[in-house]
Length: 482
Image 1 (cartoon, rainbow, N blue to C red):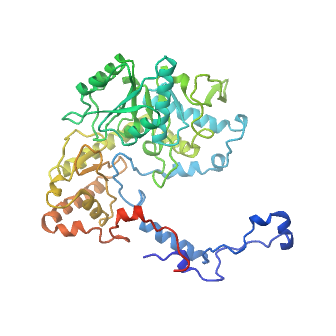
Image 2: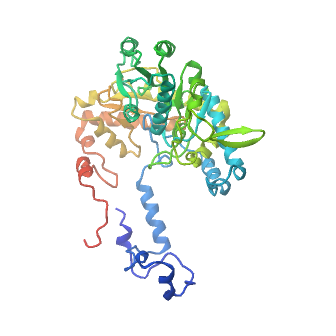
Image 3: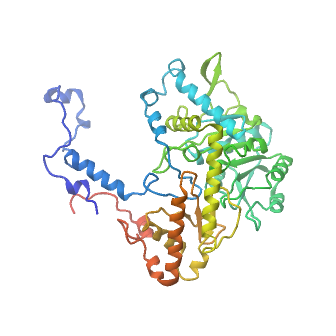
């Protein structure tokens, strides 16, 4: 185990050298009020520079991350992020900008935002985009606010949002926060929207259908045109959750098949670092009928000048301080410009090939409730292994012993003992083969020595935790006196 910095600390050690204080100590009280001055020195660890560096390097090797190994987290698109994105985003011309600077002094940043919006419209077929939302769930909320504004402008805000049972978990939460009522639509035996069930709930109170496509089973909604026709006939709008857009780039443009609202996850599909709490970006694209309601300010171009337009009387207003998470926009913009339309299409083609290849390697050992063909991800069930007393959670823990992060487990909820696996386009055939071999070995261990799996992990810095106790009794503060 790696010791804590406080345990390594020794008096009088320093990893820094500060210049001499220019202000006489006796004058400090005249400059800084007493209430802001410490009565006792801060209890900070004291170490040399190389000890600090080695400590954090050691911690980093204990973590799992995309740069270290395969991260097949279904629905989260944990792809490898090209480092050129980071280099450009860290350029002082972007990094040192302040959002309070005038449009005259930030033409480059506004140009980037304007061009990124155009790129997102081009790849999706949507007519306009707002870059303000800070993440996917925030994008969902903004999309629903736009839907409400549209219906209110038409004289009837309506009450209900229809959501398939294979939807992302954030969808019903966003619906509730936005003031609508979520109504669940069943999936059919193929894992797609049950159109007959959809027809039961489509009426004059339906504001929108909130559709994830490809859905969380990794399946493309092949009935999309029929679904869109039914939604339109009811006077409702079609919302598409774009969390799985990594499967559609250059292949399907949602705006061309009737989607009215689409949120993007720049931190998933367009290669920004994903995880650790952020930052993210969840731009929202809209069809022609919703443009007037987009958040302000909007970045516009007039006579070769980029402007911030606040003159939008039907706008839902601001949804983020300033203009959104600009650093994530820079990374996404670089990704677009490096790959272009053909490169983005290859991204999706390779993601689809990887998912189907891996699915075929594993389908005989694990139950495959919806055979596909898959798009960018697929869902296995550990129900066979559960009958032998080993859960999907046990297998996920055992995978850690092989240096792989576990896939998403127990989601979607409509699959028992679910394992949701998304290999992404950035993984090689060798990595996929190794991952499959590990799962095959785990399946064999369950047949011959199930306790080995049930007590995993065995090689990680921390063994299996009491997760219920960790939630109820977290111990995250260092006690100086113990």
